[in-house]
Image (tube, rainbow, N blue to C red):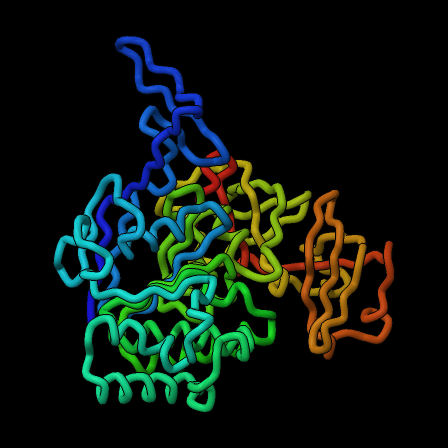
Amino acid sequence: MATVTLKNIMKIYPHSNDQKKPKKAKKGEAPVEEKKVNLQVTERGVVAVQQFNLDIADKEFIVLVGPSGCGKSTTLRMVAGLEEISEGELYIDGKLVNDVAPKDRDIAMVFQSYALYPHMTVYDNIAFSLKLKKTPKDEIDRKVKEAAEILGITQYLDRKPKALSGGQRQRVAIGRAIVREPKVLLMDEPLSNLDAKLRNQMRAEIIKLRQRIHTTFIYVTHDQTEAMTLGDRIVIMKDGFIQQIGTPQEVFDHPANLFVAGFIGMPVMNFFDAKLEKDGNGYYVNVYGTRIDLPADKQNILKAKNTNPQSITLGIRPDHVTLAKPGDPHALSATVDVTELMGATIHMHVNINGKDAIVILPTVDLTNEQKNMSYGSKISISFGGNVVHMFNKETEKTLL
C-alpha cells in the first residue's frame, strides 16, 4: 500500500482583516509571539500545527489523539489535501504531494458526519466514486458486494440512508471509502456520533476491517479508548505540538510528560506534591512525610542522569494503589468522599492531605464493611516505588 512521511509540517491560519495582529518587534529584538487559546500567534497568523514529524510504515494503523483544538484534524486534512500545508513536506509512497490535488493522492477519507447522498441507495452511495472513474459495471458490482460483505451490510444495499441506524450509515461511509482501494485511509472521528454501545461494536468492526483490507490507516479521535484499542502507535498532541509517539503500552507505562500521564488512562492518574530525596541508600520519594523507596531500575536511571534532589509531581495510577496492611510504615492516611461499586471493582474517591485521588480496588479483596464505606470513613493506602511516575515541577517532563 503506502508509507506516509510528514517532515516539519506546519499549519498557519493567516489573520483576518478584523483580527488584531501581534505587535511588531523593535529593531534588534526577537520577534514578538503571543498565546491565544493555547495556540501560538505570530505575525503570520495562528499556528495550529507545528514541528510535526512522523514516519508511518506501510499498512500501519496510526492514531492521532488529543483534546479538542490540538491540531489533529487539521493534520489529517493536510494529509488529505483539504488544507494547504504552510511549511514542511508531505510524502506518500516516497512522492512529494504538497501540491498534488486530493483526488490524485490515492487516499480516501471517512468523516465524522456520514456525508451520504440521501436520494441514493446504499449500493449507489458505495459505488459513486467508482462510477465517476468510469469503472466497468461488473467490476463496480464485484467491489460493492465485496465491501458490503466485509462490513456486514449486504442486506441493506437496496435501502436509502434514512432507513439505516447510525452504525449502519457509518459502515456505508466506510464502504464507500474502501471500494476505491486507497493507499491511505483517513478517518476523522468516525465514531463520535454513535452511542457508547455502537462505538464499542464499531471499534471491533474497524479492527476486523484492518485485518482484511491491508491499507495504511490514519485515524483521528479525542477518545483515548479508541486510541488505545485501535492504534499500532499513538501520536498524542496538545496545542499543535506532538507530545509523545509510541505504542499504546509504551505511552501508558512510560508517559513522557505530565500532560500525557494525565490524558492517557481511565480513570486519570493521581498526582501529588512530593520530594525526590537522596541518602546513603540512594534515591527515595517523600510524599506527605511518608518514605517510598525506589527499585533498582529507577535508581539506575536517576543515577545515570545525575538527577538532583528536588520537588516533584508524583503520579500513581488508581489501580496501582492498595489498602495498607495494619502497621505499614509506608501507608498514607485518606478520607473517603464517594464510593462507586462497579461490580468486579470499587472506585473510591478519597482525599489525601487536601488532594483528591481515586483508588480502584478489586471487590474480592474487600470485606463487606470496606465495600460499604461511607463519606468521611478513614482508610490507609499504600503503593510501591515500582509503580510511581515522577515529573519535574518546572518542565513537567518525566524524570525517568
